[in-house]
Length: 200
Figure 1: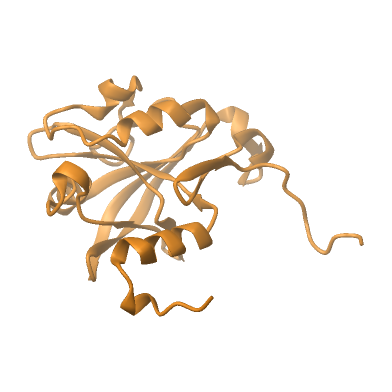
Figure 2: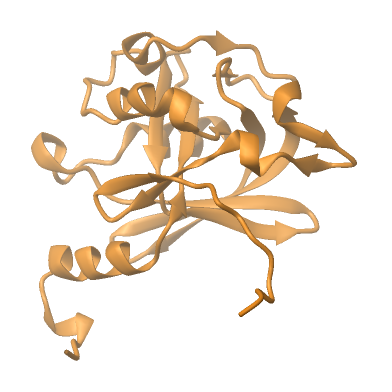
């Protein structure tokens, strides 16, 4: 099967890409508007963008469903406040993350809806998820429009990791962390790590 993605429906192309580029880590993004209203939402178009300075990127698409044609609150909040936090998700937080993904009205606090704790950050005004194993505090570097989506590049200004996931010497214990990954419209708990080359 060969497909010219330029000639098929956007949703069909998205299904092929999101089912092929896997697993994708989940950025559970906490943000805040000018009135101090909190927002928490997951995004799986997420990766490291630069090592020096340390930067992360997320891609945010347009609203869907009943919010079709709108700008997502996370994008608007980051654009206004220029600060946000990316929290990582493991299996212990899977249901809470899933709850926060719902299309809540703008005035709903997803921290409360998901049942997680906002904890004051160190270098930014936006709180992080207290239960998250790892959190990155970020300041906005730039937003790049890419077709229907927006690529957000942020500089990491502070890093938090819970003691039980830290091996020392700046290494993360991935066997304990077991981060959650997005696979098309399903999820996977990442474990069973190995090094290469493998013995035949």
